[in-house]
Length: 142
Image (tube, rainbow, N blue to C red; front, side):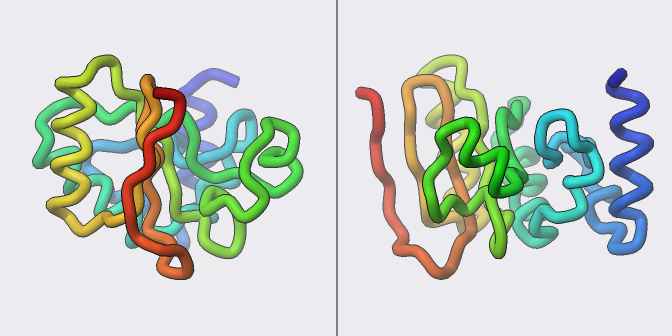
């Protein structure tokens, strides 16, 4: 499905809440599960607003590799059993980090807006606002 059509479909689904459609740095469909644009409406709006603020502070693009995951999709891709990408939270994203410098800028900006849970991988950063889980920073794949 072309990006324009995905955005139009996703915007239709979130228009009731509206906050995702007002973000400065992200398109609505960036929060949707792959090939399921209507899932964007599930993403936690407060988390999206925090990400938008962090992107402003960092001054570099945030490329979201993964956000909303419905349980069957999460299982199919080998996601964690209690993933914050899934219900009830839908409050996690994986952000591409092309190098150490961009990784540091992204993490610094995320911390500045109040994120406290990170899993740092060599090529991406998992961040979430799941208040049911402990705060901290973990490193995987190093």
